[in-house]
Image 1 (cartoon, one colour):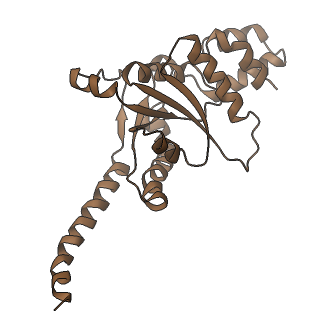
Image 2 (cartoon, rainbow, N blue to C red; image 1 turned 90 degrees about the horizontal axis):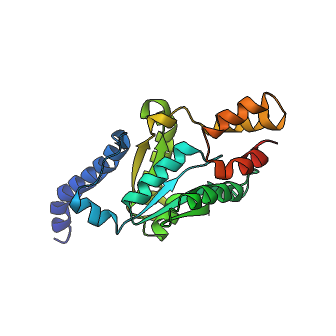
Image 3 (tube, one colour; image 1 turned 90 degrees about the vertical axis):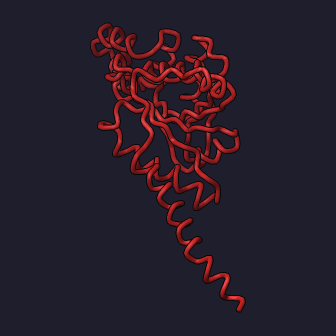
Length: 228
C-alpha cells in the first residue's frame, strides 16, 4: 500500500528530472552571447542592473584595451563589477596572478571606475562568484566563431560544476563579444611586443604599436613585467 503513492509520483518525478536536465543542456548548447554594439538596458532593466553584482573572469595575461572597454561597459551598466583572475597554487606562472591584478587595477583606477574591483582567486571562480552574490558571470571573447571551442569547456565547467560539486544552481554565463576596434588586440600580441622592446628589436615601432593596445598609464609597467 505504501508503495502505491510513490509509483504514482514516478512519472511526475521523471518529467521534472528531464526538464531540469534540458534546461541545463540548453545553457550549454545555446550560450548567451552579447554581440557588439552592446545592448543598452531599458528603464526597467537599468534599475535592476544597478542593484546587480556581476563577475568578469579572465586570465588578463596581460590586460589590454579590448578588456578595458568591456569592463567599462559592465561598470556603466551594473552596480558592482568584480574582475576575477584565477590561478592554480600548484602551477608556476611566468607572470603571477597578483602582478596581472596590479596592472588591471592601475588601468581601472586611471579611468575612475569606482564600482570595479579586481580579485585574485584560487580554485573555482564560480565558487567565488556565488560567495559575492554575483548574478551574472561574464567572459570576454573576440567572437564565438573564433573562441567558442575553448570557451565551451569553461562553460561546461561553470554550468555543471556548481551542480555536481556545490549542489547549487549555476550562475548564468554571458559571453561578451569584443568591440571591433580592438578585435585585433590580444594578450599574445602584447607579450610579443614587450619582448621586442626589451631586446631593442625595432623598439620604436614596437612601442608605437603597443601604445595602440594598452593604456599609456600602465605601458612601462607592462613592458617591465612582460619584456623578460
